[in-house]
Image (cartoon, rainbow, N blue to C red):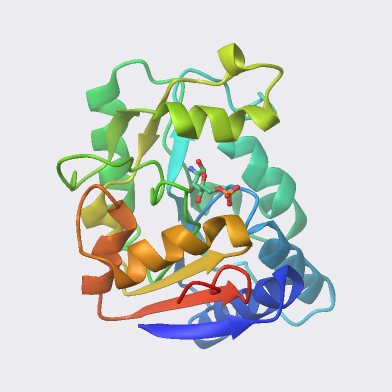
Length: 241
Ligand code: GLP
């Protein structure tokens, strides 16, 4: 694993955006696996700025996002669809037809998941998968478990995840309790993986995920088996390693 040490959140965001930008420059028709959460927002801001300066072209890029809440509409400002449009898709020249997220409003979960696996296959797999890291080691919404679930599936969110995400909702009760997420095989098949982590509150999980035993109880630990992972983290997040 390649560890890129950043000074702070700003620096982490710029370094991560640099890796994504070089992927786009080297392969203009690349497939980006994209992530939500607060951590990647700064990286998206850098990408938007470089696009606006004429240094990046998203016209041939395709994307597949990691996950989506189940049961909220795309128009809901808490949906990951809305997040991606607000932070990236709506601000660059990516063709919306080439952007993909699980369909949170598909109530038939088998159909939602198999459609999404097909969508990932149809774009030819993922060149670069961007990942944030949950406090409990989740990637996408692959929560601590007794197993690694290979493909896209419907998950019951862990109480700690609902607690962590409630800051974006009016109350705990408003947070969706389920989500559709790519599985571990979908993520591990990405040709490159870029993990972004910031803040002292993530230091313990960075240590456990990347330097502890490989276990489904810490889903991100499986990334230790991936041949091309770059972790871009700030000093605070790296303070325990
Ligand atoms: C969410 C997302 C993850 C994200 C994680 C961490 O629940 N499903 O993809 O990586 O939480 O979020 P944050 O970056 O806000 O800490």
